[in-house]
Image (tube, rainbow over all chains, first blue to last red; front, side, top):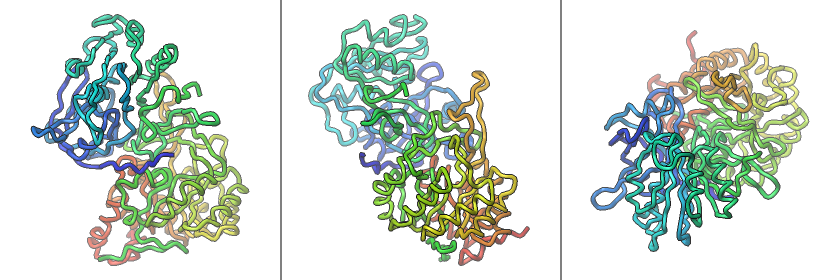
Length: 281
Length: 302
């Protein structure tokens, strides 16, 4: 079993920016130099409103990107969120100078894929949020945490599916990484008319697939990867209460030597090799 | 500087702030942020005799100022705990109180005997009250059963014993009294209140287990009432649990009669809550002119 004592930081941070980027979708920037220096693509952090007890628990958000100062030092963190409930609607009302309680970085992050020439990133809806930093690191544009800058840029294709075009967020950011960005909308309002896995099936097979999005989409992606015999990693989004491994809320069934067992997505994930997941249990 | 030490039967703690079982993992998850030497003690997640998968997700849901949980005692069993977690835990600079749950009285005795042979434990807490184990027996709804379990473990285990009680009873005092009569060093109360959350559009319960245990600030007044009642009427020390998240909460439980407190749900939304509360205690005591814990415990003027 791996060491679970990886250090994270708990801190009170000021909001620097909180602006709409698509329908019901916002980008929030907070200042947190220590966390920005250590966080890696695919990792997440917990965010809580400091005052009050309703909403009570923190919510997990993935790193969208780190913010650099004029010297290139990481000083802040951006995350992108969709307003879905009590906590996210309260978040959407925050203004610059308001404070958040945050703790992180948490989770394992995306695989390095140093030797892979063509990586396919497959995003469903708000599942796009962890892919900007990952695309930048795969493209050799930015190093994160203690990882060295990738010397040989990978070819990156991003497949991004939404229900309708007004939910598309960050497309220009993804394009700026030099990745090929392919869009699907279920209602036909942008790009490919249909689901993101349909869009992906229309294209050349990448050598490695990485997905994030709603669970039915991840199932379909895992099935496609298996049929194609392409390795696939998935970032799961199970509900969490603590984010740090102490509550055992966010478990998902994972294959073991003698069957399966529940594993905590927050500390054993959120990124798993799709072949290890035992979803049928 | 106030003296923060407290005594619960044969158990001595450097301060009265404990991390509650099931809300602190196996402590190592928090090693990066918690200075264990500042915490009165840590109670790792409940251990059962055999490994348990736990309940089907969703396992928790947030409710108004609280949460419902139905984890279902997901753990890898007693032998794994002893081989894998205990060596780490006993090296921590704080009191470690193991917590066990048996499926039967005999299993409690067997586990108590086994874990009682291990070094490095300050005490043993008996989880007589997990509400989420399907088909399980809630031992602490019947004074006679509570008495038999505590008595039986007492015979085979040399550790100080704490009986953790459920609030889901008509009257908790006779049950705490039974634990006292059977030789428990302390009782901890309360475990969670059984509740239900519903998605009416789907006509479905939200939790995989249907019902779950309510915890968090929402239950604090209910827990305070029970701590106060038991502390007045039962002669062994009470450890108060229920929505403790601030130093005011800690002080309220102590004044109500708790000799120590356990911080539970707050660990989930404030991973350093235990150390913060312990560090804020001297200033709160000073506000009442108190120099020892005994100057404030059970001093409610009611």
